Amino acid sequence: MIRVFIADDEAPARERLKELLEDIAAEVPTTLAGEAKNGLEVVERLPQSGAQVLLLDIQMPGMGGLEVARHLAL
Image (cartoon, rainbow, N blue to C red; front, side, top):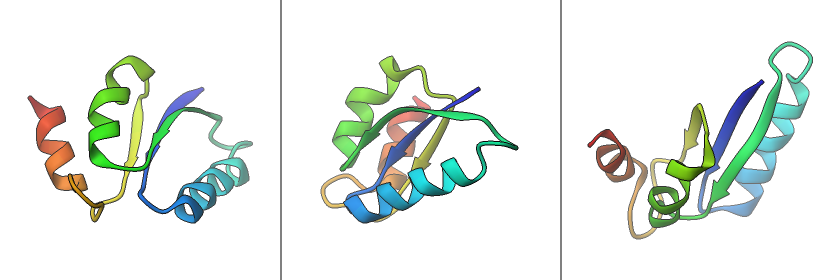
């Protein structure tokens, strides 16, 4: 089972990603490890989530996805 973390500032986009994960569950079993609505939440929550995959929005207010990726790469 793949642990997935979803990060997007728009709630409908997060919901749609969860629906898509449900749609492929038979072929690719996943579980939701967490979600965040901005980059700061990602940096705070992701490390303890145990996530193996991060679905990350690039354009978010405050700290965008590329900046988040730079922080996580350290």
